[in-house]
Image 1 (cartoon, rainbow, N blue to C red):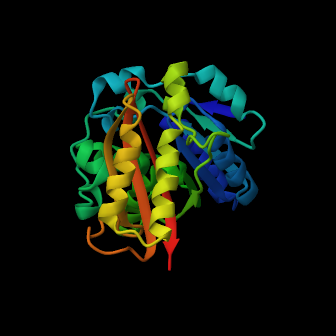
Image 2 (cartoon, rainbow, N blue to C red):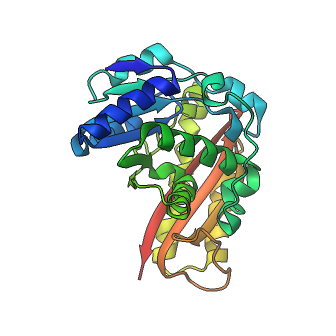
Length: 284
């Protein structure tokens, strides 16, 4: 595995691979890697000739400076974890390398970014789209791999790929969970042991919502019961719980029992750490 830190170095590699007819897989990450990331890398290695894994804590997608400051950074441990995954190149640029001058262009994803994460983190998806589009241009992948835990981010990236005619296939893999159901996340490292013991309640809330919807409960009924369930755990501060169309991510009406493919998405604060999770449910 080669480690590159400059855009020019990565572009030279990808240009050579393209000229040799090799297929390139890209796995964009912010580091502090866990098994969810590694599964994406292994999948990319199975499906492509070469794999680029980027590790870059992107400042433009953080609307909370303290969250950016505290985000886990483990470059040596990450490089060690990648050694046996099929990663060809680890791209680990500095902020100055990725942003030699401030960006002035702004992305607008309309209704797609006005709900959930977009509503609570202004500017977040502009930062995501900016850095991912830069990584697409630098690595020129045939496929790019993302986890479903960031469901809204995946939807935004798919929209960007379609709107800007990127010649690549976005690939989404299911959320990887701990044995107790907690979605794997780099932010989990910041939880105290006491908070870590409570954190699986978030997935339990999504499981409760799934059962209720399968029993034909209305959106309002599910919202009420999930909120009541999480209120039993005062350590958890629920930021949002949305029941949405899985394609558009727009919230469903309160009155009726949903049908079709439904996304259950939540964000909550626990021990000063913001956690997100979701499940997608197929309803008759």
